[in-house]
Image (cartoon, rainbow, N blue to C red; front, side, top):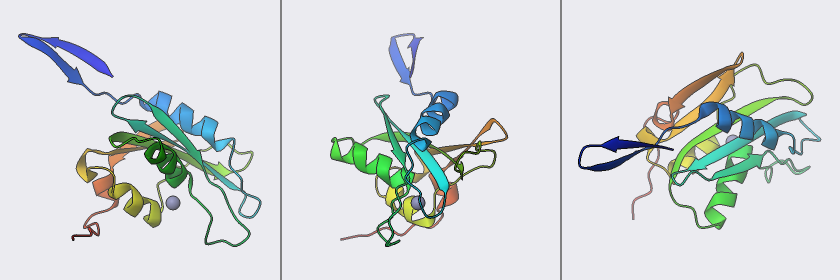
Length: 149
Ligand SMILES: [Zn+2]
């Protein structure tokens, strides 16, 4: 987070350190449990307070209970009482290989994240050939399903 001094007060500007967030996602990826696919994914979820929650994918021999890294990070943050999120970084590749291609969240994770963030203000960060690539969740999930009571 960057604090900018302005006339008449201090304005808080929230800046996302994409390199730091991607680095956290890469660390999380090391813990992936993927005996079936061999495809490891790490995620790092950034809160508005600057905390980072890591997640990795966790597979199950019964596939439906398998968890994506993004939802693991989100579950850790929500269970700790977090409510405000700025961004998530995601990296993924076959085990023992460097992540070269962009790795975006699956449809289930897009929907799950959408219920906890403002779509147009939440940044998704991934990496392609060593360069950070960003977009909003709204770009990845246009016309999102919204449950209304
Ligand atoms: Zn997913």
